[in-house]
Picture (tube, rainbow, N blue to C red):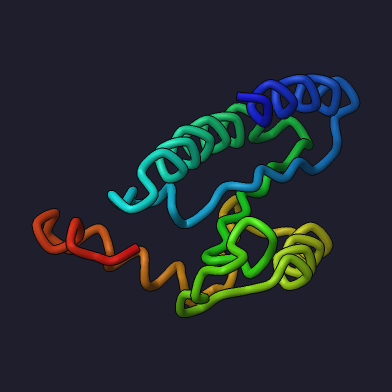
Length: 135
């Protein structure tokens, strides 16, 4: 909720200037919500949907929005948990975002990029199998 409110305020200010880049920090957890973290995943799914719509609303205004979708990030929030495949660090996430802003490009930023492929196929996994995933 807070991120959506801030994105809205900043988007309007940047739209008035006709330039700028916003970054929404979503997560791959919002792409297909799992039972092990359904509260977190559903919150990220809502943010992801909001940010996608805002990016479309900003199209042609000179304001760009990047939706950063990292996978498992090794940090304070995940302390004590075993890292998942394709894990990253906060510094790697930050560097990927900076590179995207400098280079321009599409709205979606998967960190690391391999997660884009993985989650493309994840949508085809039957729910009966998906709910059995450990995390």
